[in-house]
Image (tube, rainbow, N blue to C red; front, side, top):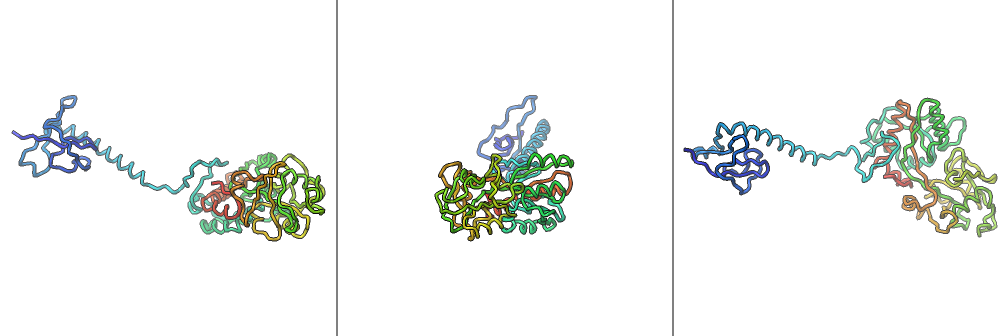
Length: 399
């Protein structure tokens, strides 16, 4: 008669017929604890006994002799144990897999298009088309190219070439002109410092496509004066009165007896004017209209009483002009947008600075490669690399 001994119980897979001399479970291979089962385990429902018997002569084989009634149960147990071990192994592998395709941010960005994703690097951006694509729009975006945005894009995707295209018909450059050119089919995508107007949406709809705005950065509007003018700061209401023509001499603001020379870009083209005159007010007749921000800076540098405005990114390192502090409403809580030739990004980010705006990439949705090019450009600017350049250039990154 065969001799029966106690068996070791595996806490990992519940196998209870491991011979006492084994250190690892014969089913799952895990280490066995010191817990043992009695000679004969209780019978399962249906009468299948899990009694394990082995003779002293057969101990050398280190494997039990199974009774005939035990074989079906063992087969089922082996099958479920194998599936369980495979599942556990798969879960552990999943936990170790690093998925870098999409950058892991704390909150999901609320963007205009489902095609926009946040990637850690420009090389990770998919579906970047091959070809030469034209763009135009808000001149404040020029700072991005100065700080190497286009060069980095070309390095990551050599097949994707983008080219700034001058406006046709002698139009002044700006966000409004860029949107006009995009609607007319002259561009692959546009850059804008304001949201799309209803009238622009309507024109696009007439041509059987839609427009979409994708935010990529935040910018601050900075006012600047001639360096010799002893004016350190103004509030928004004072600036409105200056550009509406209600205040015409600096002595009215406690300064020198000197005529004010306000300089601006075309309000039909540049959104920056509407950020100041946000209730539909009109520019005064004495305001001098110039083509672009560079010209405005040159004019203020030569006019003793000159004042104008520009994106912070374009002003911070200029020596021929001087930026001034700005306060909301009629208050005297002045915030200086530029300190030590650096943009006060914290004030712009916290919205404590009075006049800020979002910068957009405008995409033309028409199912063509031009649409793909615009979405790719927005995705490239929203990468971790792109957002770093945006901050270097003097804008506030979104992520």
